[in-house]
Length: 218
Image 1 (tube, rainbow, N blue to C red):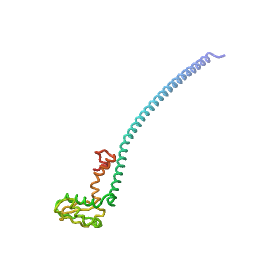
Image 2 (tube, helix red, strand yellow):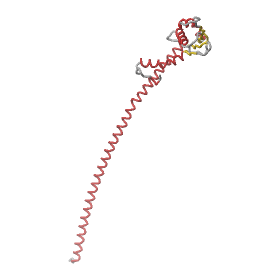
Image 3 (cartoon, rainbow, N blue to C red):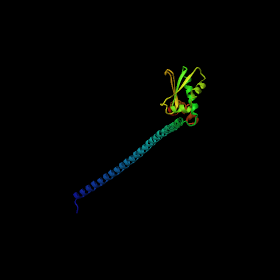
Image 4 (tube, one colour):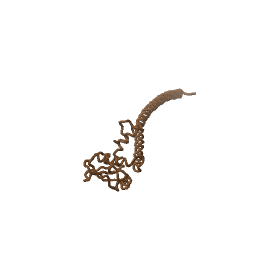
């Protein structure tokens, strides 16, 4: 038979256990609620960060796209300019080869015209026209008279002389005293004329507008 003291101890133990269970259940519920709240907060933050990154990424992607698109016309312009310049340079080289080979034009008439142009820009009445020796032989003894006739000036004395330095055709002109000189060798003549020629070629071929100067040249 249990004594009152034992009964009171049993009741106290039962109450302690019951209180412990209640407290533990409360702790578990509180922990569960806090965990759920923390999880929800973490998910919300993760979603916010993801959205923010997407926005930032989209903005950066859009910015990079605009930068790339902005460089396309510039790059295309550079490539077109380079292509035009290469084409014009090829034309210049072809013209030079034809001049040196005396192809496609009357060389004698050209020499007469070049000498007449040079003398017309010089003062005096006595001049020396220098040619490659082989050209002087081929062009004949009447060359000085042909130049005089074209100029229509009198009195006028023109002497035809050899100049071995003129290897690619054309001529030089100087007065008797050597104070005036004019270089109308074919390569030099082409070099002086080329800036305007290239502009005309580019315009007529619709490579550039009429007021443009391809390749930055004059």
